[in-house]
Length: 399
Ligand code: ADP
Image (cartoon, rainbow, N blue to C red; front, side, top):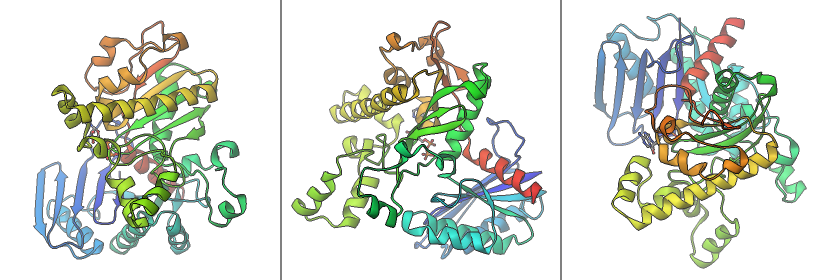
């Protein structure tokens, strides 16, 4: 039994065929990427048990891309209609205040996701494209929408409300929604078992540090705060996004630099963060530059760590007692220096990383604090596709 998981972006579609009961560290049964949709040349890459296929050709639309990918899988005997696929799970970025839980997709659900486009103009249209194409190609399998914002739907009002004019905020649905919810939920739900605590009495911080980055404070399974906001631009310094900045910078750039809103949007989302300061957004490259004593890379790293520590500190106060701090996603799982520096010199607060445990290679969920550390520090690999596969399979069986 498998789930097909689809993550449809504006010019690409990522997909996986996953056994929802598989181990979190297992490779997906099949994975694929359709790239450069709508451009002069595109590519489809498919990995399956028998090997890897790459087809380079023009891909005019999402439908062409997914149909071609399915055709390649069919040829290899692992097409979605040839396998026992019980559910198709779609990652949907913005569920607004409408969706807190995954939903079986019917026309009315697609319509509501479409109505939420003003809240996520870059993401939700591509998610809708992916849903429509996949429903057309696989009409006999239940499709399920899983929302990035869902986990954070019930944040306490004091954390969700922005101190801007209440009437304007209400009219335009401006509040903190939070993103990466599937990952924060997946990781935070594993932590109590790893540290042998009752999940109903566990207070924790989750640091999802990938190319996008966010953190959350979770009390007994429920988030009480998170760093992303109305959009995924807020919070931590990221690969290419600024994270929190003085909002006055936007007016300043508009008035003094004559930049348009779209130019500022592009600057803050794609040309800022670690890349904006150092020229690279991948932490492996950043590390190599730091080792070469590149000053810009060093500055980018220090700004990144400083912002991370600001959030850790504020969530420790919000939580009062902290049982665990967990690192996840590409940087969090692999970069021991980020982990060391994020929590350096906090012994007074009961946080003590064990250097040897921290330096051990990425090998599944593990504790990296000392035995004496009051706050347990962990690395727990995330697997958003598996989490979506599980949610989709669960809902499809009920339907
Ligand atoms: P996303 O899903 O947000 O694109 P990931 O969680 O896959 O991101 O994280 C990608 C990032 O993880 C890369 O840009 C890179 O900075 C970082 N990364 C991956 N592997 C390593 C590694 N071995 N050491 C340090 N950083 C790594």
